[in-house]
Image (cartoon, rainbow, N blue to C red; front, top):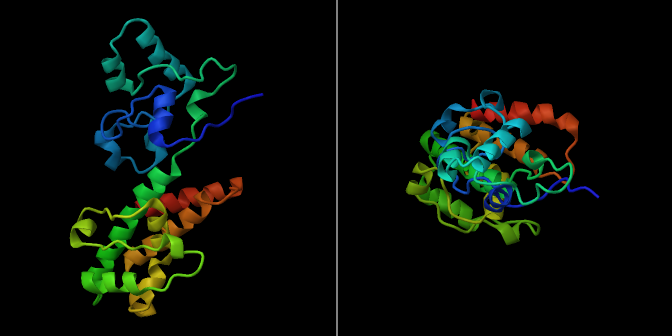
Amino acid sequence: SQLHLFTADNLSAHDLMGMQTNFNSGKFSRYCMADYDNINMLSDYTLCTLRTPEHHEQHLALLSSGTPQHQVRREYGVVGRCVFSEIPNIDVLHLFPPDVMHDFMEGVVPVVICVALNDVIAKSNLDILSLNSLLANFTYGQCDVRNRYGAEVTTNHLRNLSIPGTASEKLCLLRLLPIILGSLLSEQVMGNIEGIRLLHVCQDISDIIMAFVIDTIWLARLYSLIVDLHD
């Protein structure tokens, strides 16, 4: 038998892998050497130095040789050896897949929603009161009612690019927001707002990464969508 994947949230994955469990400073990624202070300049994985098994072993060797853990953590984000490292032929760097809930549903999605709503409010007759009225009075379908977005959105939320709610509620809002806004705004107005287009791009990304099975031929399309969203 062989252990190929171990799914976990980011905190658990980093703890099991022997990586730093602080995600707002230093080398926070288990996939590359990106530094938190520079993440706004890294819009493409080709701009990042990817972690390799050879480099990872070098980082672990520093710990074994007596280099203080805080120094190795600061420089490389590594604090120890993975708990599964004794399993034969284990690929530690590819063992833990991305945490789609925290990375996408609670990371990317709220930012895109806020960017879109800020753009809509700036370019139409929609205000924050009308927005909350639309959200509160929208009739959700049977498959979405359990994840209906019930929180009140404030101008501070939109300014900080962060909205309250659970991950599933935010994903539901991403899917339905163009329909909700379409009950007040004309198709022509919606078509001239860049934020609405970004919503659709993010929806297309969601359709791929949330699929039960992902065909490899979709990956080129996914990459182009991510580049479009960043640009």
